[in-house]
Image (cartoon, rainbow, N blue to C red; front, side, top):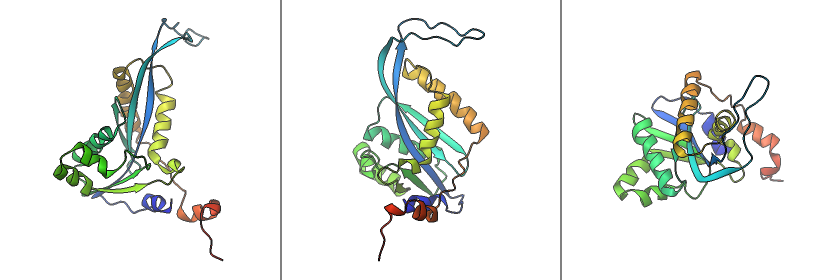
Length: 207
């Protein structure tokens, strides 16, 4: 935990990008009957029956120091999907950065080994060498600020049924554009000192 908290309080360095990455599955749901549009004094009405169209995945990349985020919608959330997303942020989104500090949950897909399972060894090493990875502890995913962004996305954009990945992608991109224009940031105040006091039971003590 302290490792991640220390990362959040580093001094900004223009040559190093500090990012948080998280992902969330989204169920694709189609309507069996046409919804009744909203009218003055009455909300739109949707039939309780629906059609399951599978599940998609959203990768969220958040740069808290700049209040900038990017996202990528994929069909799945496999090791290869994660590896391709990381290559995208290394080669396109942050190609000018000398080093990328990446905070993530400690999932089995979020490993440098996933790069080697997806790309040729030389290419995988090139990407891996640019990363400085910091994992949130078990049951500590709340420390990942990208999870906060996914929560905002869910409330503001994913509160209606999405029938296919195309509609989901379009909705997410519209939300992303507006959110980045506003440059919303996270006012992170929880420090290592706070953790040692408020979460004292999780810290070992020496008598």
